[in-house]
Length: 402
Image 1 (cartoon, rainbow, N blue to C red):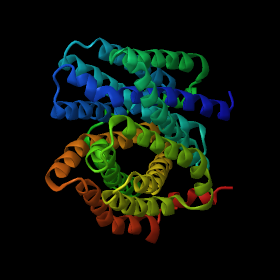
Image 2: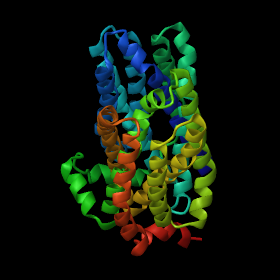
Image 3: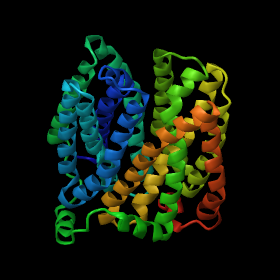
C-alpha cells in the first residue's frame, strides 16, 4: 500500500474515532441528569474521561512501540465500542462513570495514530501528515454533535449505540485496510529492548532533554490556556451571549470548520515557507491575544470573528509541536513520546474545567479569557528564547531538506 493510501486510511480511522467521541459530548449533561447528577457531577464526569485518557495515552504509545501500531489501534477501538455500549445501558451514575473512564482510557489511542503517521512520513512532510489528525478532529467535531442530536430523537442511549456501531466499522477498517507501519526489524528491536512502563521518571528525563523539555513545557502552558477556553465555552455562551444549547452547537460546528481549514489547507503551506520554531512562537503569541479578545466578546458576530485567530493558533501549534517532538527523539521513542505529549494535554483537561468554572463563578464570564491570556503572555519570553533567539536545528529541519 502506498504512503498516500495509508495516510487516507489512518485519517478515516481517526475521523470515525472522533465522531464517536463527538456524538456523546453534547448529550452528556442531559443524560447524566436523568440519574440525578448535578453540575458538579457533570464536571467530574467530564474530568474522569480526561483523567483516564491521561493515563491511557502513554500506555498505548508504549504498547504500540512494542507490539505494533495496528494491534494497539485494534484493541483500543474495540474497547471504546464496549465503553459506548455500557454508556447506553447504564442504569446509574456509577455505571455512567465507569463507561466514561473506559472510553477515556481507550481514547488515549490518538498517540498511536500520530506515531503511525510519524512512521510513514519524513521530517519534511510530517507536519502536513500530522495535520490530517487535526483535520479528522475538526471534521469529527462538526459531524459528531450533529449526529448525536439526530439520534437523540430516539432517546439518550441511542447516540451511544450509534457510536458503538461506528467503532465496530472502524475496527473492520483497521483489520482490512490498515497495514502495520513498523517493520519486522523495528518490532523485534523493541521486543528485545523493552522500555520501562511510563512513570514520573520518564517525564523528568524528557524535561531534561534540551529541545524535548522546551516543547513539553510550552505545550503544557499552551494547552492549559486553550483547554480553559474549550471547557467553559458553553457556560460563557450561555451567560454572556444567552445562547441555548442548539445555538451553541452551531457555533461549535463553526469552530470545527475552522479547524478543518487550518489543518487540511494551511498547515502544509505554512510549514513549507516558515520554520517550525517560528510557527510555535507566533502561534503562542496569537493565542494569547485571541483569548484576551474572547474575554470581552459581546455579540455573536464578534465571537465568530475572534474564533478565527483562536482556531488558527490552536491548530498550528498542536500540529507543529507534535511534528517537532517526533523529530527530536529516536525512532523507537516516538510512540512513547507522543503518548507523553497526549497525556500532558489530557492532564490540562482535568484541571481546566474546575479552574475555569471556579473563576467564572467568582469573577465573572470574562475571567477565564483574561486569566488564560495572562498565563500565555507570561510564558512568551521563554518561548522567544527557546524557539527564536537560539533555535535547535530540528526547529528548522522542515526548511532544510529538499
